[in-house]
Image (tube, rainbow, N blue to C red):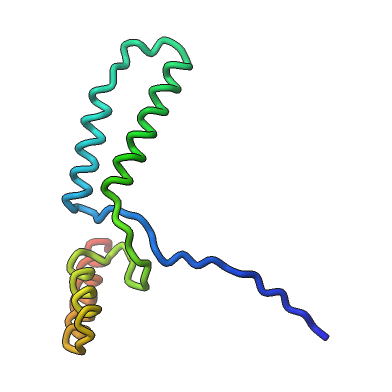
Length: 121
């Protein structure tokens, strides 16, 4: 008799991100830059004060990230070439389930991939 051990595997189906070049990304970056620029570094005279300042920056970054992040489903189209047009058309298809919307989505995927990889070459 042969026994095969099967381990339960967690497959992540969602991720947190900011859409590249989105308004949320721009606001996140601008707020973080403004916060970092306002930090008073004139009184950092020892390692304790330095660590305290770094911890404050860390907490602020995490707080801003939580404020602006978007939870997205990980799908086979969650690739670096996938842009706002792909996401928009995919959502349109998901809501309508219409074959024409699916064809439009596949078309935009093809064009987006071609443009993306042409720039890489």
